[in-house]
Image (cartoon, rainbow, N blue to C red; front, side, top):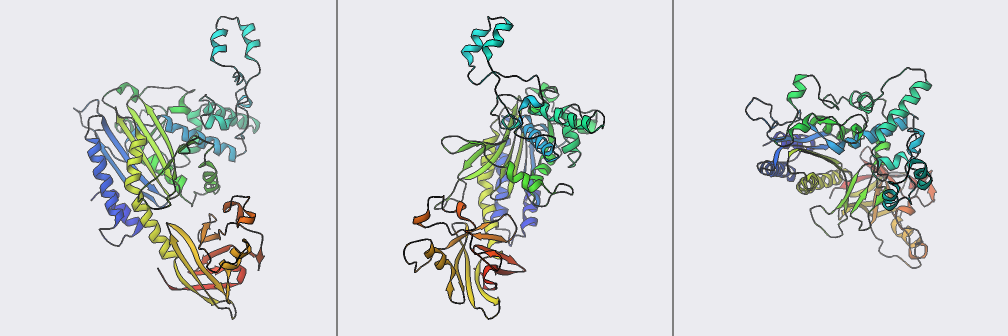
Length: 499
């Protein structure tokens, strides 16, 4: 059994060796071991990360495939790869950190930081450009018309056609340094990222130039073909788009930083920043893919297959340079991420990532459902609240946590609210989904809206209907010290039996 499987067991305290999570870890190991034995992949390193840390971490193949005659390290968590366009994740993260310090605004125009930046107007097309090649500079300036207004947000989300976000970050930082009289520092993108990300979060095997340190150099993966790209310098302009090197352990640590609800000291803003960051900025017409900053978002059906299954948004960033292929993927709904680093001719890391998700998702779903059942589901009885009596039933329906019954002092709360939202009686109330507020153990009852007032989208536009009692909304419930609390009725429930 692999170390990754042991990590998975330790994290979730699985009851037996035949649990689905054990099988998923072993399947993942076998799958990538077999896949890497094929000639189009020289090496592959993969990590699976949760808010609790790394639960699977393995390497396969040959680290330095260009020279197999000498002694070399195994492919493992310390192996270092060129990560190509995955670099953009760090560049955007740097932009967000600078924004948190008040040094820039995401919707600032690019020319605020790069004054010489002057792209043509949106109406200036290729026919204009090719025609202008024969004109002198003065005439060209008249024809190009007014410049487009391109923002930092557009640079971050691939919607501007330029890879200049790193330069804007550097200029914003330098302006702040000059304004505060701190002297000149961090003049290049690589220096800025080293200061604010690599050093700040302990990513000590990440850099933009091959270092003099022989130990680090010995851990750099090199493909059999295109081996000259192992130390090819992109330069200060393009570093922010694709110049970064990172180890599997550093990328796993960074992924954990994005997933964890417990940020490091002095970074309390990170969870809310990540919630803002992991969202689409443009959705393609078929609804299966979207663009983020700089995420490449897939909306996937993942196993186990079941009725009324939603697509899950997977926030990818892929990278490709000759011989080097990389991917980071975040399954935000289920709280885990996958890091894949490859050398060789095969470059479709998204497909490798999808294969990993198909293996992992049933196990993560099962573990999450088990934890939800243990924490919340079952039949509950009122234990405090004066002379009040009542019962509640909480269950799972197609993977959704629901309140199926809530009765206090003879009042069927679910039926009363649902009848208020419709024109007729509601003898058998529908189970009501419980939507997390983003705080542990705290939920809203998603009552929705009846036909007469369904002009707004019925669920998320209807949270917190404005009816309160005892200082709390009627749709608020939470768990505290093992008890279910319905504060607007002033009652607490204790679990009678678990389902």
